[in-house]
Image 1 (cartoon, rainbow, N blue to C red):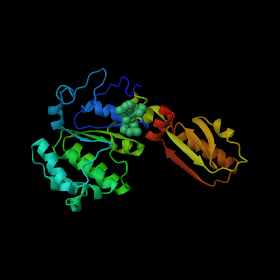
Image 2: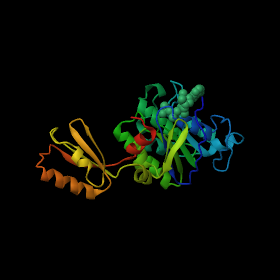
Image 3: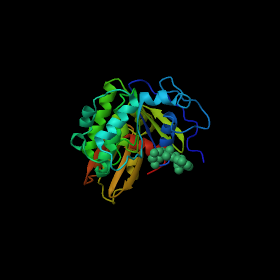
Image 4: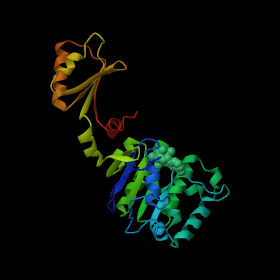
Length: 285
Ligand SMILES: Nc1ncnc2c1ncn2[C@@H]1O[C@H](COP(=O)(O)OP(=O)(O)OP(=O)(O)O)[C@@H](O)[C@H]1O
Ligand SMILES: [Mg+2]
């Protein structure tokens, strides 16, 4: 089975770069190859000018990695884990400050086994920062985190970029990719299907706006389809949604509804998001 097939990408310094894709798309495999945890069958990878396979040790000193699934011994304390990782890097970043940034200050003397799932995840992020890395790799950075912890993780990632670091992350959350990443690669079945800034991806692959209307069944939505600028109309869950090219089509829709004296139960517009692009390109729900 081919997990990753001909992926080619370049990430700039101080960039937050995200890869998004469905389960099994090849995100973890791609990241593993980049950080020397897996040997690709072919291809060329350079990270900070280093070859991950032949210069693995040098590379691992310069990057931080939070893997999708990690474990530590049950009876290791948070503080001890931080100390252990510091030894590997041979430098002295301020562990206290890192733990505080990740909301773990009151857990320094706790055993790993007593941490909640989200706290474990935050600990692995803290450990990835111990060596003051130039690039950090976060695989599924915020899965399993509560909404507040997710937001503060986003702030942390932005802070890393502001400190001159480069962030390479994978995520399932489209809103996360859209709000957080400078550029995003959408991958599906081991291939990149699109790569650009979130804004450009939405502009080039999705409808500009959707108009959602609570219209009685008696009104045939076919009438809406004939309005210039209306690209698609469908009925779903009691609402009619019209995908439109721009806001001038909305004016025409409203005129038609007023003209037909339609009593609206609901009327609002939605901007297209990266999720729409993702669904369109991967055909997945
Ligand atoms: N060690 C392995 N041996 C065999 N197949 C593997 C191995 N690791 C991954 N695969 C397969 O390679 C494909 C890509 O897996 P990968 O873990 O990279 O996906 P992913 O995009 O990270 O998915 P997820 O969102 O679920 O984490 C999957 O079909 C998976 O089953
Ligand atoms: Mg994965």
